[in-house]
Length: 195
Image (cartoon, rainbow, N blue to C red; front, side, top):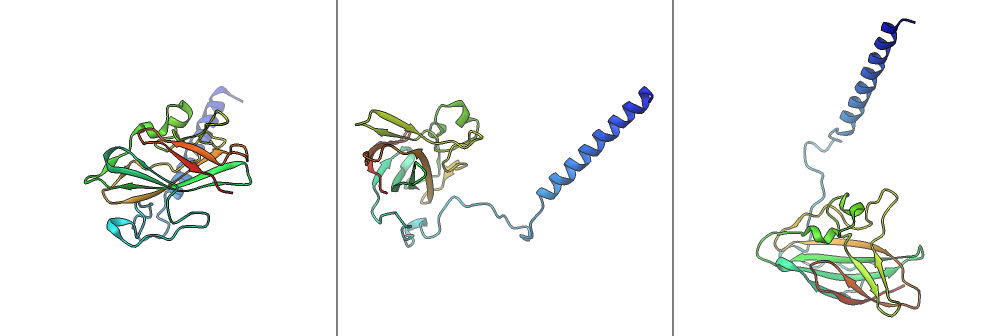
């Protein structure tokens, strides 16, 4: 084989790989039959905007919040449940509401200061559970790619809107039922773990 043939073959293979990559990329960005309408998620929950009817609590959640944490710019985090699962983790569900008169931009401090979590964008990765008796702090779990197991991508909360959020932590020992929930820029509160 000549050197010129090998170089030409390489260029042909590279061009084919680029063409296949572009084809797959364009197909992945297809409309999906939505008629040009946006199918993205909304940052508000129907029934929660401006005093609408309340959404009924889900299984394992109480009608009364476990705790209510005050944050900056009129933000309130109502913790609706903290449930211990058989997989060895605790899932904390909450509602983040903006009671302020203007849209609230969420602080990057909510993401925490760990490089691996910060690399994955805005999240609630800075949240911790503190077992005061056991003298241990539990950080938000991560998946195998380092993404935090929390609600992600919430940048702003419009005035009057409510956004459901969740965070997953390693479970404290079964003998521990009360922990302190902490989230940067918000007040802390003691919550009861069920399950």
